[in-house]
Picture 1 (cartoon, rainbow, N blue to C red):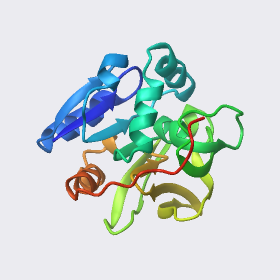
Picture 2 (cartoon, helix red, strand yellow; picture 1 turned 90 degrees about the vertical axis):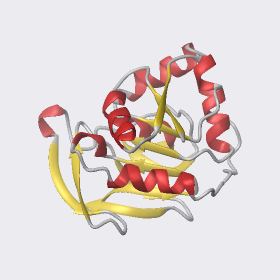
Picture 3 (cartoon, rainbow, N blue to C red; picture 1 turned 120 degrees about the vertical axis):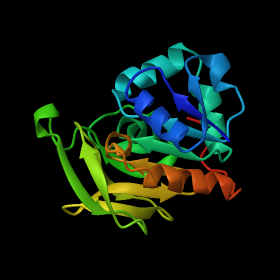
Picture 4 (cartoon, rainbow, N blue to C red; picture 1 turned 180 degrees about the horizontal axis):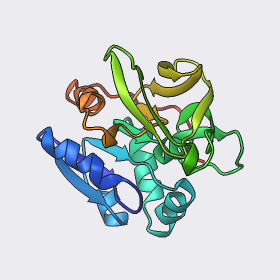
Length: 199
């Protein structure tokens, strides 16, 4: 199995380490040629979403990656990656891939001093460690979006067809269960093409 990891900015190395520990080959996606390579899954890491969005377009990666997501490529998106997937941002007019029918609030917990750690229920996995760093949360979800986790009433994890979106950083705490769940969704052989039109 080979998973592409967006590697233009942000916390991509930590994701790669977990995937490699789980026996998965990683392909760092740094340019348009990389984005057109065949992969069985995609990780959009945390970082700075405005910078990532700008680089995706400048490096000719935006359209090929969006086409893959719309076609049903399994995606795990964390923090900034969630913002890239969101159809709508509550406090920003920008839109990026816009394939995940949720409304997301950027920097919802304040700046870095407001970052925090907790453990909460996540789907069927039980309690998992969650590290939030200048994190967004999900204000509302569209039809058929499954809510996987909440913290203090705020939605911080969802699944929609081929996409898993998280407000937090599962790669920072040494717990592999969320990544394993993502890999299981790939090996299950399910394809869930999206219905959204290109932006």
